[in-house]
Image (cartoon, rainbow, N blue to C red; front, side, top):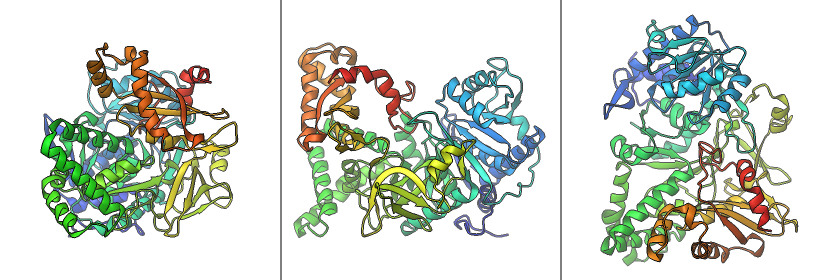
Length: 596
């Protein structure tokens, strides 16, 4: 069968995700498909090689006793084996249960007790150690399959198998799965409590892929290249950074980590980039810092490019002839160099997972880098809506995907219905009934409106809205987004439910703190500076700038400086960089209350 790698999946007739993978891998043949760093260089796995490994793994898993419907835990960094394992599990008839590499032993234990996987596939000895420690505490521990070899298990384990042994088998035929079968159980990030297992069908994820192709069709999908760096255990990357690229026959490069992202962008030269707002904020800060260090004419040209680019976006047709000519020159002198930082062939960046701050999106638009904003959640596989490149409105999350219905409830909550919805929460019928009503509408927990163009405007999380003692509703996410846009502030959490006014926790920007200490003759180190009255006054100036733009009920009246950033390690951030308010309140609640 003579197929071309550029042919997208026929989503309507595709029975399951594994079948889609094998079809596209066959089209790719010996062409590069999955790229990973080995000995300092990117090396490709071809489509045919990837398909052979996935088929062999399915055979090996069946030999371990895996039967249709069994769960398989998957713990690994982003690498070709992640996708191969995911497909191999499905091809064997199993259900993938991704887990974050940042999970603690307690986190793994929760998933092992809840999902009860028969097998756990783990990449490295270090990651395996935590899984094995958790497995030792459950009644029926899974067989642990290690991708990278090690001499012996780091702690005693009931059963251990090697990836190399499981993939030494001949490929086995793919299980006859339908679109209604469960493909994976993805655990929520736990921003509001214990993570729940979201059951997503093959059809829900295929529907998301179809919708994504429709959104991006106008950029001309052909010979696309993706750089995968968000955790594949998160539904956003699982769909947008893995199965969507597979569905259009794209190549996938796997980043070495966030610390190597800038270098990997130059090596992979992606055409489409998916990320969370926090990453785009970081990229913006790095670019601005580099320009400030250069100074002089280069900074002046850069600032002018941003100014004119902003005017072009905010007042279409408002630039005079002279400004338009100047803008064309700046395309060559500034914007082309910015594009080169991303590899030079980026067609679009997509932001999802949280609201994109307007100023961050506008920064990239002004520099000629189109950035689209998507909206969704794990329970919707996850994409619900997305802006289009031909009609970018940075204040909205765009119109819904094809075949997706969205309405606004009487209390302002966004409701969603369509083939993209989850099958429910694993083993939790009560939570499922609370999330999806009898008419089939998913209650997203987000507050918003739909404009005359059909685009969704998200104003806040229903559960996160602060209701002050006067009965006024305040959006903490909006205020936090404004605070972290100030150069002095790197993280913030606003507090004040049932209180007369708002207060905040603020993490100072380390670079600003170091520079301030040097200029003012103070000892460096955030721990010391956060107790310095003069430094507190400097931070007060940043809060005051934000307060000047806010209504009286939104103003931050007092704040605490803390020297420990919110992080995944201290359980105050999810792996996708959302703050876990309940965890932060556990630690700082008494100090915040003392501000009143």
